[in-house]
Image (tube, rainbow, N blue to C red):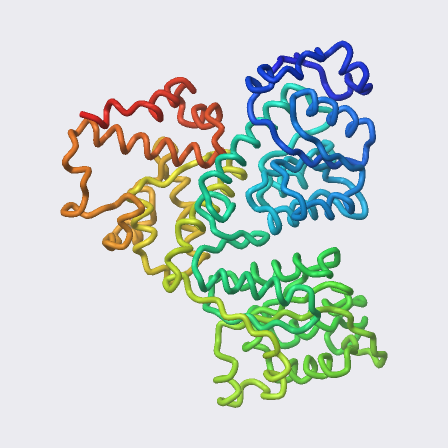
Length: 500
């Protein structure tokens, strides 16, 4: 790849300048192309014609096949219908923006890396795109060499993923829907149900233990549906008194019986066109149940102290960690309300019943921590085995907390047994967790190796996990490990220590 120096995209506004002076036409020579890295099909989307023209010329000269468009709507039609190796998209476009294209790409072409282009004014949105799975983002105006290097790294990762995962998903994750990570059959079924119900307006009832991720499922349904451009608001019935809950949902007029000193808009108004998520609806007081049932029947509501009805245009998603049918039998929940809510039920299994999700979730939380705290960490084989063996009474929420604890206590960016919370560190490792690197003494073939070879293999294992956190970027991985890229490459490729 040729070095284009410190030129920024602002310096390269005219494609003819690129073709005639900055780049030699002989770059098209096949041998030169082969030396430049992965040749790929790139989908380029930006509503600025000058940027599209410049980048199209740049990538074509580099030997790539480029499909470019000024429209997010047109790009949406390309994704999933044609195979691309990379999506390079601006974030701020209308009516279809880059975040929407990112979500669609992860649904239709999950192995395709996505790079976002952004102005400094939308940097927070760009960071959010990383949390949703974008490979990287680049701020405008950007340097040509910076862009090229990022593109090449993304293409190399995409190629590795496509070659090493038969179903073309990301390493260690069989399925990703928005922020949901699924590996177990139970969660894969939940993801498929979400895709089916997201486009409807029907009420969804999510049931599962505390900490299983009911709110995340609700938000995913909202984000995958046609109401996603409108608000997603939530209320927790168990956290509020009857009067507070009623006011939060319905609102109140000034000087009403609620004591409001000004008109207060309730969620039914504030979420107009969007979604209201009602958590722990089993704890909803009887009087509020009565009013809520009338909203579902009439599609109308009124603020406390008002005599004027207002139309209600929201989708309701409700959740409960209690068995609502049992509450009906106990006379604590209205049967007719339960019947109206139980239209599209989704049951989320506790984490102890889906151990296949533990390590993919743990790695997802590690990536999130690396983005927020700039401290990338990897799990040691022993720590991974303990996570798989633990019963997780607090479910996914407890796992997330454990990973944060591990990152804060990690040794040289590696989470070991001592880095984990005490109750997890004391967990006996189950034999089924052997594939995480914690094989039993009697079954471990590595004990036949010399000590030097054993230590070498474990060191290599840990480096591979750190490398995976950076999407294969050896320079960043080496920097986080405080070793040189050359040393990292030598350890990863050296098999001499294992042969002894």
